[in-house]
Image (tube, rainbow, N blue to C red):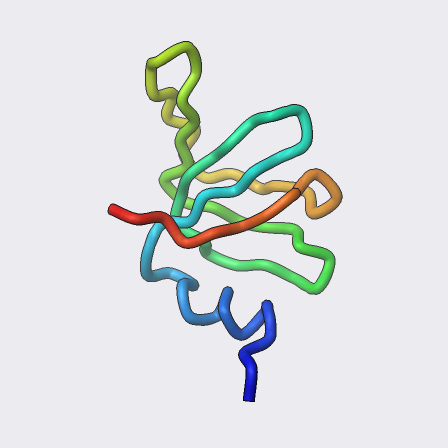
Amino acid sequence: MTPRPLDILDQVLNRQPVIISLKGGREIRGILQGYDVHMNLVLDKAEEEVDGAVQKLGTLIVRGDNVIYITPSVE
């Protein structure tokens, strides 16, 4: 059976970093702590690269309607 999108998110939950692409061209990386069916996300150790410098954001809540895609990060 083909995995469903939420099944894939369950596999990375609290384990490995994910990259979140947001409307407006922003990308945020962090550890996925939780989500809901609306794609509202909770990230821990979130960070964003701005002008070549990494800006640490800490714990972050991302509203689901801003999310374009989520992908596991390669370390």
